[in-house]
Image 1: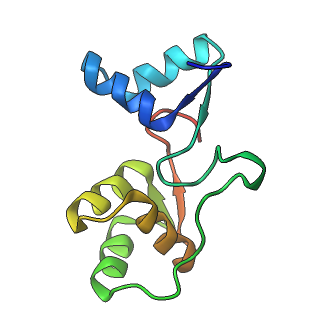
Image 2: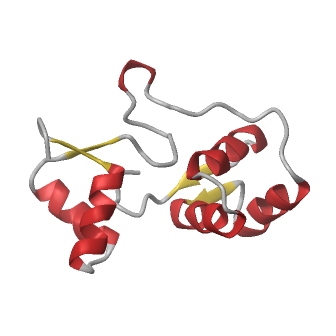
Length: 114
């Protein structure tokens, strides 16, 4: 934690190191009034511009299908976005950029930030 902030990546490092759930780390962050920055999906925590993602111009049929299959009412959970990225061997921000283009909202941060 630096200046009351921790990156998403560092928070998930704690999850791995301590073998605890992301929600436990999120609750500890809340208790310490620690703010999460640099969301690995690029959704928030990137200074003045806030987001680090933009909609992709085109995406594969397979990726679009996987996102649509995992989404409910045009919403996709953070965990599902991470799983899709892993399944396709893509950076997490590529999945969130595809969601931006598809007007699919990512919700339910695993750490509880949104």
